[in-house]
Length: 343
Ligand SMILES: Nc1ncnc2c1ncn2[C@@H]1O[C@H](COP(=O)(O)OP(=O)(O)OP(=O)(O)O)[C@@H](O)[C@H]1O
Ligand SMILES: [Mg+2]
Image (cartoon, rainbow, N blue to C red; front, side, top):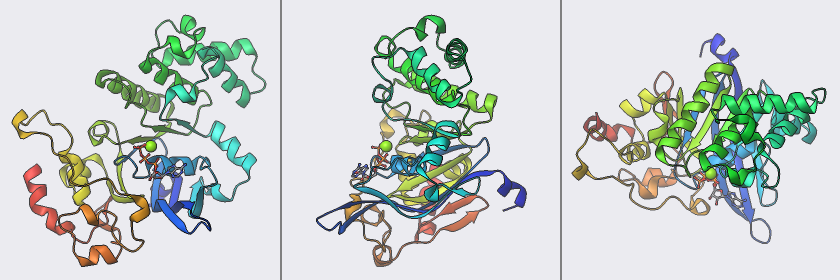
């Protein structure tokens, strides 16, 4: 990679291992993030995609220093934010970064918003936590301005309302406004749209994207829906069993997918260009029970039609298919025919 490009890396997650331990002597390890590596560049829109239980939220909570111990524990790897390893930082330092440099929108807005405090007060108080010099009035004005920026109509009125008085889509926007209130370098949005209808989903994503354009904030969007990322993401990371199995630009992923799991996800995206009779493809088998994944194997092997003995006994290494396009699979050449049928 060119050194110029490296300079732009603001978050560098290297070989992250986050386990959940159970049993009397913590002898059972569930590897929710298992040797997970990825980088985020300044202002980049990164999408992390995978089925339920694949370890998407855990990978984000690890970055935020929010893995609940016990039973969760980051047991290995590095999380470098501008070169500083957050895993070695003090609690105070992490709190500082979490509030001001990296912020996160959680999966459930109703649990993240305080039901008994007005929207405006919640946002203005967050602003005041990070800027003790700002007056209450100025903080409230900034909160109202932010609500306007995320396209909440009549923001002065909405600021005086409680979360239950807002629709799901508006609650999401209020969450985005709150997360943006400290002008973060990275905004992590964990499934910010699943509870919303499709039109509102698209509006929320559009909103995140325009904030990225306006403020240069890098975005990490976590979603189970590969379809939603195509329009916005600069980079897509496909996660399975706590690992990234394929990553690349949306073009790489959609035009030249190599991992059998990525192919399955693409076929599961509804397509307007195919007749309805074509039906919606689902990936056979169940999402992995992570407690059962063998350490030295491909997590996808039990569901993979190309799997050989090797896949059950050896972990496939990451291989570069073309510049910026990486896949970890022993059988990626065998997916050729399926790939051709897709395009
Ligand atoms: N607090 C916890 N205690 C025990 N196991 C947990 C805990 N949180 C997550 N896990 C386990 O870690 C694995 C990854 O969970 P994670 O929440 O990251 O999945 P996800 O990809 O975000 O799924 P979803 O799309 O449903 O949100 C799962 O197998 C889950 O059961
Ligand atoms: Mg999740």
